[in-house]
Length: 335
Ligand SMILES: NC(=O)c1ccc[n+]([C@@H]2O[C@H](COP(=O)([O-])OP(=O)(O)OC[C@H]3O[C@@H](n4cnc5c(N)ncnc54)[C@H](OP(=O)(O)O)[C@@H]3O)[C@@H](O)[C@H]2O)c1
Image (cartoon, rainbow, N blue to C red; front, side):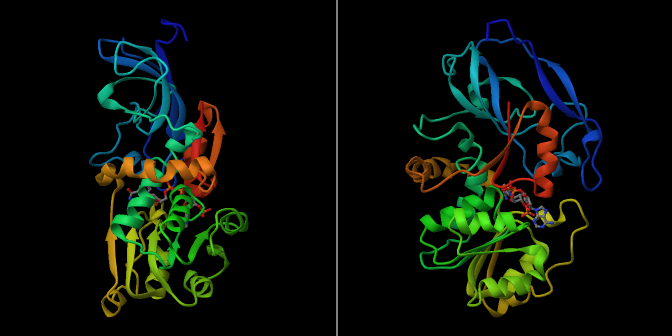
């Protein structure tokens, strides 16, 4: 790209608030004027955009919510194409939070400069190495403290966090890894390609029954991405001193929250610990994750599964798709 080629970015604004499941009409594609490069700033051309379920909460407004008719936020990896910052040379690859647009003007403080990890694809920095993988890593190591020989259940197992969790659990020495997902193709992917010991489609019956069949001896750790009936089922299947790392509750993001699990009091009888967490409070674990996973990504023992929609104009489709299960692995947009 020439020095003067790009002075506008194609961007997506939110023009109306969702009430339940969002729709494409609540977004608009616009041309945003980019600020001029000043000393210390650089122009980044985004290569991949991340779309994530948590974004729905920001779109709904309220405290900390996103403004209407304004640029949206989201993680993106891109390359510096023009620079007035010695710390951000042209060609550097960076991750930053100005997603939902084709280009962004950033400073060094706005970005993480990506390490050069030969053999690791750029998209992995938004997948198993990104906030998605880090959520799984933090949930398993810091919150649930999964120990070698223990049995794990993870829900939304074929998604970004779930596929990272299953593979990380193996590296951490888990005995059995069990997952739930929303289709036979996804459960086959988990058992045939990702090394899960068992997987079930949660549409096939009451989750408690399906989990009992998949884990007849119970579980030690549950990484919860779904909430609702999955959480109740996991409590029911949990052994004494089990741990639940509560990462998300996608079953209630577009509907009224269900009542608390009917069997919550079982936490007391079996000394079970349930703890919620936000990955943003654990960013200090990022380097640890790179170090752990880089050699395994190179050798192919660990993969960063992804569903990629091509073209910036597919961004809204990708976001709506991640809420409805259109993805296997991390949902990404490639520009
Ligand atoms: N605490 C944190 O800091 C943190 C950070 C990142 C993510 N999260 C949470 O982690 C979870 C997974 O996030 P992700 O980015 O990896 O997304 P993801 O799992 O890649 O995508 C979401 C998946 O949820 C499943 N799903 C949708 N509706 C469902 C329902 N009613 N019941 C069961 N499953 C349903 C869909 O797969 P199926 O086809 O299997 O239904 C969909 O693919 C989300 O709850 C997210 O909010 C939390």
